[in-house]
Image 1 (cartoon, rainbow over the protein chains, first blue to last red):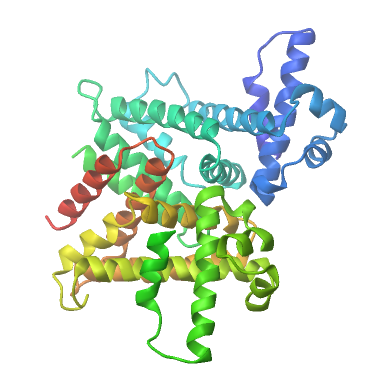
Image 2 (cartoon, helix red, strand yellow; image 1 turned 180 degrees about the horizontal axis):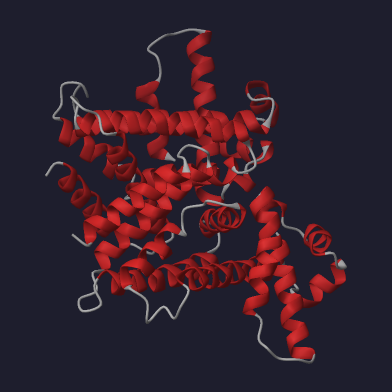
Length: 204
Length: 204
């Protein structure tokens, strides 16, 4: 979880006082949930486990997140914020100023797990998909996430005439490949190569 | 679950006696597990729930499947057998004699949920993916499933020179789209259209 915490530091608001501390504690708990989901799946998330992983008391966890559902949603938000921060870091400059194709390549290849952090992120996302079958609130959050992601990818493919269908296929391909990488079927470099091939096709 | 049972009847061996009864009972239990996973997810699978869904005693379930892991694996096999039978029915003739492009279209579009049965099948498959993170045996079964599926798709794309990379992308795309359909993000006809577009591209 070292990398989650490290990434997290860059996300925190540069404020002092109780507000900043509150935010830091919430992130610490969300990171603990992410670590548990990545290691043992959503079923293993409990007040006791999260408290142990975060190194604080169960009462403290409950103070910030009274119900398990809120823990799960906090982890979802945290995972997405960390992923967005990672992409900004990799692109190395303001996304709006960078070359669209290079941003698109970063956004899509970041969906393919290649280290502990990206593996954890995609495991969490896949677990949320499974959870969404029985939980309409999680399903609604995933729909918002994908609407936003597909829209951004469409604008990168062609800012003048965003192609939502092409964007849908590109993201679906990357996520489908990510699922094969996670189960140890497809080597990360093969999945990555397929994504690069698909990007080359849309820019043809 | 009506459609699962109906499909199941076609799969049973045309034998009589205790062997056939045994097989029928195992299928009945596996169908109950599939129904529970589709409705409420893998976490809801328990001896009591499966017995209630199948309409038999918990002792009877345990006699056939002593541990939960075996129930899960039986449901996995059953789901795949039902899916294969559905594809054979749709193609309407021996797969080896049919037009490769029409078989490929059927195999890939069957991955996109469009009714209760296909939705159940893809929910079960996605749940198995999530389970595979914590269970190497399930992961190994998924790898075998995909090896086989990709190999068959590659042979349909070009029997003379099977293109495993193209097959990998086609199946990953269909499954990535299926995940969006399952969470209510992408309408089935849009996902289906993207799959047909990708098939047209490889046959170009």
